[in-house]
Length: 153
Length: 448
Image (cartoon, rainbow over the protein chains, first blue to last red):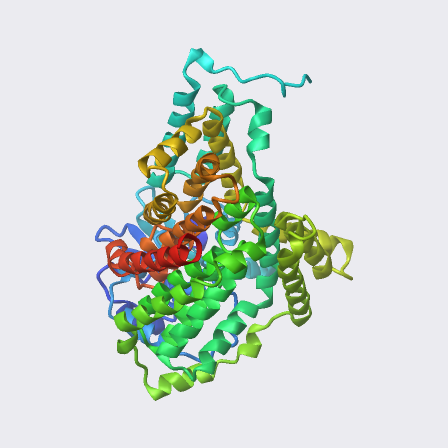
């Protein structure tokens, strides 16, 4: 089975100058955990995910592992302050510019292995050779397709 | 394999060995300063060139490596790598912040004292690696800018490091080269470093302390930190504290038993490795040993190895002895002037370049000057001048010491970058003050 048979083609996207707060609202409305960021010709520039937003609001000395655990610290309002601060800033500053790309002729096995190896998101973006967005495949989509096939058998 | 011990090295292409050695040294130091390549790789390349170009033989190169310095550094790195897993450093940092009831200036003072004490007995880089992230967490909780705290910590680590034989790599090198014991450092340097530290804190208070304030809510937030949660492995903590105390006790009596500090540190490291894994299955033990070994800063160790060989090459050509004579000529053989020159030149140089290669070059220079002043014992005050100059000089700029760069890296990642010129504006005069105090101390104690 090829990627083009599994992918979702109606993809909600964002553009770089949108604010993180607006895109976060858009993700909530469509119940998304990740949104591709594209330019005017629909070429993918990166992705913004709930995970990358959360990473951005946590102080770097925690993200980097310099403090291995801080169970001794009370709840600090630094995360709330950072959240409010980044909601007003542009998507471009916080998007992940190295998402997982696959092609429409890639096999299901190849896409599943790529998502698993990539590790950062549960999604693969299906693009053409100019990185124009054609669709999106999640690990959930792959499992659902396998379930459907198993039920048929 | 034939023995080349008795062979003298022969320089390739018939070049003058002095020029070859000096060129290798200057090129390596210049590229290290440019910070474009790893300093350990550069030092090893330079060391290899010394042998390949025939300035020294392989045997002379190996003999030039100061294994006391290497052993002491490696042993302490192993002990710290195991101890830091216990969370004791975070525990002490948080406890000290709570002792002063969350007062912003009190916290700055306490964290500086903690940094100075740890830096005196562990290496500076490890100390700031452990204390700086907690500092950022505490300043975030207090809602104050971290710069004054990190600035004070840089000074505390370098001043604390200057106090003991094991506090800073230049002291380790000086102690080994001049056969000065842990207690020699304690009796000659430890009396003055607390004075310098307190005066430095006083100036920091004038610069930043008066403006530090936090609301009562924020101070109460500090009191909600639970330092006991920071302690992760109490049995290992007890073992680590026992070995650390035994090693420091061992350092203080090592000279009496004709033992090198490296022997004590390596024995302590081996004992703690054994205690850490006592009772565990063999597979887990092997895994734990490998993890600790991976935490040792091998880059630093290999940097030292390369550096010792390069300096041995230059020393072998006689150029350092010649420089020693020139220094004595310049100071007209006046001991006071020579001591002052060593102190101030070391301080200025260490503010601008890595103090480790500087001290590595200065050691044979001081040795070369000794006969003119009446032997090895007579030049002891010059060793103290070199130690104070090299360690305290590191405070003069952001690139003056490795610990400064580590703190700057943390600040940058936390979104509060420390700018080179801003730091220098605050730090250089403060460093000059510490060197002036050192000069007065050295004069009163050894020269008057």
